[in-house]
Length: 171
Image 1 (spheres, rainbow, N blue to C red):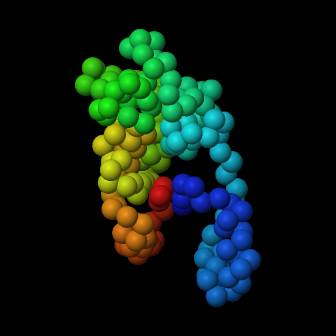
Image 2 (tube, helix red, strand yellow):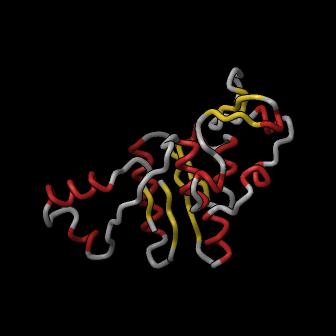
């Protein structure tokens, strides 16, 4: 399974249509793209939590970028896991927030690990150790990249190295 964040199904269909046989045919002989709809609201924190848990926003309760968290009595920026008025990241983690208890569900990465399948996530280095990333990427092999070209080279190396293995890759 190969998930590319922000790459729309219609964009893929357009590339297939425009490239004809020269680029996409070898890929489509092995893989078939299927549409994956987003969440509502389609904010980063909500959508990534849905993709990482396989649960709807109503189930995982991450319903926006900013949320009131009763236990801390404040509106929290869910990307930074800090009060919305704070300029530092991960203030709630410093205050003792247990990320796995807060999420309350296993991640896809934890589930596939239990089935003996490896999972990797390519993430921009800047986001690697944020509260959101730590919560959502539990049990994944987290691989950082610096920029888009570095991401493509890193992805190619992963796919080359693990050709015969089943795996889950999130980019």
